[in-house]
Image 1 (cartoon, chains in turn purple, blue):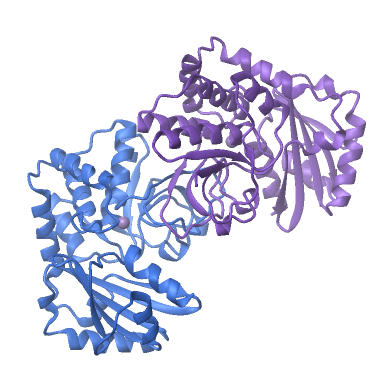
Image 2 (image 1 turned 60 degrees about the horizontal axis):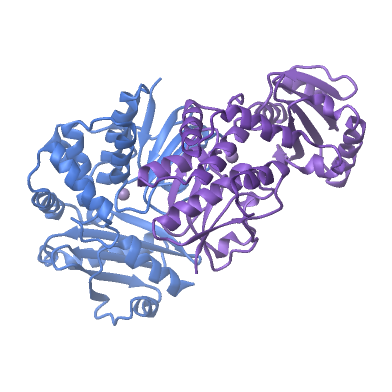
Length: 306
Length: 306
Ligand SMILES: [Mn+2]
Ligand SMILES: [Mn+2]
């Protein structure tokens, strides 16, 4: 029976590429390991898998009785629902430490860097295992995605150096150009149902007892939303009502202009204005420099609710 | 304001030596960091500090408002009581993953090896920092202690190789001989109050709602307990009553004969007999091969209680 590697629910490119890369490393080290996923893949991730010739990892949501590695999260709510009946062999992650616990010793590689794949590269180096060309390419793309091509405030020099080394292995001359191609795919939102867009990268947070949902769409030109913005605004109003949320924010992030338009629906809009020191106009505001939900959007709002 | 490194309550040699070693590494990397301790040191640890010329780390039990690294544990109950008001920068450990959480990304080096200092050595190697002679000696002794000079079932080849490398740096020709000297110090129990001995390395466990206390004394010749065994037995009866415990077990571990005598006081001695498949005589039994509380004593008892 092989071991598994799985990332978080609503998988992003980091969760998928790190599962593939870690499964290869562990298998090479003599421990047969299979990458898996908890949900459907985004167009960006499908672009990466296609580009480097990978199949989609197995869709597997139940892990009772299995042994597995967890990547790109350490919060119970984000992982497999039956994790308590599984054996966690290790955790590789770059977020805050969540509430997963184990009953046996394990392997944790957690670092405050921009992407899980940057840490997986450290693991290859530690074990002195050569990274295959196609895996290096996928890892590199995941880092470019998580760091918004190095523009995110979560990006570290370790991430930049890692992309350089992986590009060398993958034989890619201009990683940033490939990163832009990838964000173009991510930006192709036309024809996608509005609700699918709103939920493409959506996370709920409990802020001092209030349910706050924050979605994010990262594109290379916000003009793409001009025709559908009214529909997006109408849909987050519905989403707020359906989920009995206090607030829903949808971030329309322009990775070239390096900022985000906030679409807001809230029981108390003043709290949003206070959190970011802005004034909403028609429930919208552009904030220069905001690229990271994790580092720039959640903490000030959590403080405003506290 | 410097950062701190601190190990668990009732500090052992691993908690103290890894705090000293990590503080030096972090300080060398440009992050002023101070080793600390949560309690009084054992004769074994004092022997190590004296041998390599270290002062005792600062006794510091409150960390509100401070930033710190946690070593040799990741369970709330074992660490500083006000940890929720502190910032955890990282965790270096070799136990199961406990219930500590953080609100910000951090650095975790957790590995299923025999000693935290084996992991600290990996950190020095990763950062390409030379380990000073005296620190190498202290780290080496901690590994010899945690692995019972390589005899514990928790010992891995990584621990053995690490001791070899550290001995080379520290200029110690025969690490195992030094290990024996250390265990001789640990074995010098005469003149110590009985209660101090019982609590020297004592941990409580919640087993299916029952409070179970398990202490361990590791010595090089069990004969040392001949004259005081009756007093030890009388004291664990008192300890059981005082703490309203279901069971207290005191392990008298002979590291040369490689086994442990179990002194048992329990509301249901049959559960102990079933857990280890033995018959108690006068509430005592010798079990061949048992050296590790973590790996050989706790799990079967937890299963028997389940
Ligand atoms: Mn990630
Ligand atoms: Mn230890």
